[in-house]
Length: 41
Image 1 (spheres, rainbow, N blue to C red):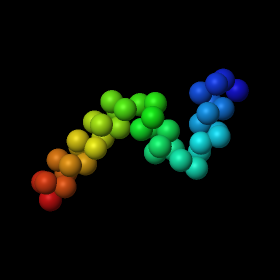
Image 2 (tube, rainbow, N blue to C red):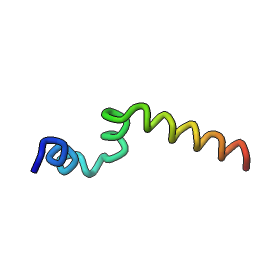
Image 3 (cartoon, one colour):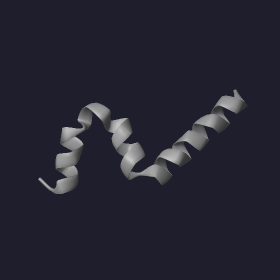
């Protein structure tokens, strides 16, 4: 198992937190999309 895989396994219970910590740009884009969809509705 590679390091990233081990980290994912350890923090599987907090996948969202993992994504916020290690993929901030992806998380921010998703938040932006969510906000747009919320406004559209």
